Image (cartoon, rainbow, N blue to C red):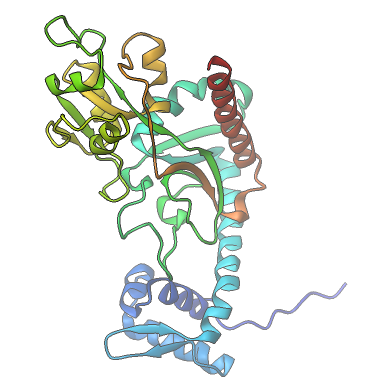
Length: 325
């Protein structure tokens, strides 16, 4: 059987094109590939000469990809992802490690307590869990405008759990669950002098703010919660602010005030009596938790195992919650 001969331009030229198209910058592509901008430009010109078309419009202060470049880019990216998946698959088979990246609050308060069940079900998979604040969509950064995309290779992960919009082009995305925000506090916080009987009683307590979402237009806060509770006599802006949910919940556990927290992240503490929900009024989050992966790795045993286990855990939690209502 004769071997297949592939007529392809140099791999270095296609790498230069993919990087320049992703960044819309020869300079940034050069930094990523550890070469000079001139080398990137020469590689692109060589590729354009090979194809007989222009791939970029070189403007004075900007770089625009042409229609021909846009048409070619998805398949080039898919090809590189297949290359990366083949290499990663061999490396992971040798190392026996599955790397998952998750937001700190989700990892600490929801995922880690459940991991013994995954280990028991799949003892052959060695899980490496990385916690990163970059796993939360940021304003103007990972809301992924045209030409931008989430690149899991940069995080070194086979799987990523993200708290965001779910808008991650070119990746396989599945929603884990969409959480609500609700007030929580230490059971020792309310007292006869400062009760928490009706929402108006919050005027006598410190309000703890979780600023995990850094976009004020998307971040539901005390102002939104008090409005949903029909309260307009409490100052919604006072109180300490924390950059992530772990810190805000720790402050609430310590009795420092009442925090607005994501319900799935505090359910275990509420069930154990470490926290109470003084008012069962919730506001929905504009973000949800998503499981994100490159399509090229979805078939891998370790990836498929973790995906099935995680979605089953999320489903069972939601089913138990519905049964208790």
